[in-house]
Length: 112
Image (tube, rainbow, N blue to C red):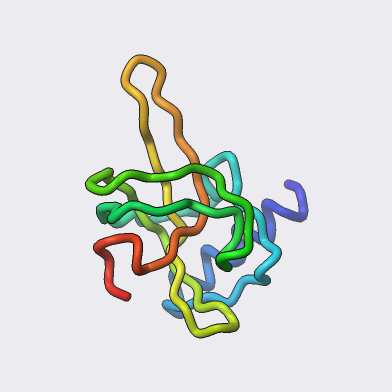
């Protein structure tokens, strides 16, 4: 298990136990589901980018359109006090693609 996988697993476990998890803003999105992810909660996109980390300055992983279904596993609050959800986004019909990353709470129907 790589260090990145261990950090992701630890963050998931802490999130499940304590609710909010603080992850370094430089944490990158994973291309696979985090190990130990136990609970995905449905939400809907209001339109907005999924990013590699939970700040507006991070690279965009994928752009979502309003009405697109997403699932979130945990959230984090960044240094500016903004809540970001770690999401799984599955899209495409013939060859579905799944991406993981962070989306600002104002861009989904989950509580902000």
